[in-house]
Length: 118
Ligand SMILES: [Zn+2]
Ligand SMILES: [Zn+2]
Image (cartoon, rainbow, N blue to C red; front, side, top):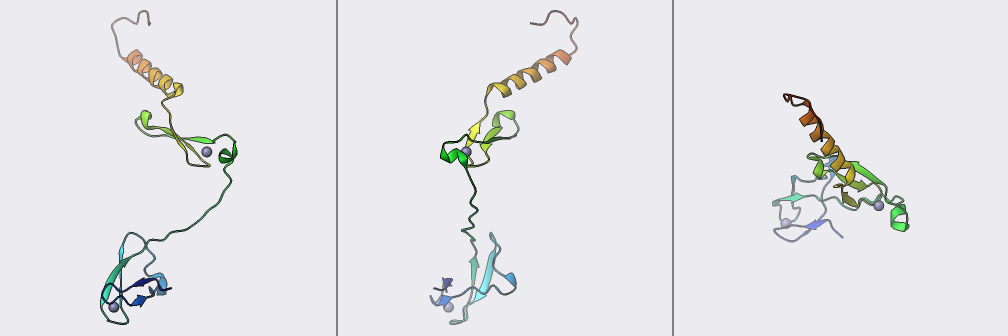
């Protein structure tokens, strides 16, 4: 099976990767058709690179969430490092931290009299 076909004459074409040419994705490469001798452009999509790994969470185990910090913190999410499951972290921890930050901010604001908080 050939790599592709000439867009002009439909001839079977094997992309010439001499010197590593034409492997780069997201850019336009060119080659000459050996049959009609027209130049044509092509883009490359490299696919099928499998990297298997254990994912216990897909077998009844717990997800191993990792915090992906983002700004603003509401956009921070937890991502399972095994299966890639994403979970938004609008959880107590972040709410508490936000509240703490807000408190710290208002506390540091010079007010006339540091009286009773709450
Ligand atoms: Zn051709
Ligand atoms: Zn998982």
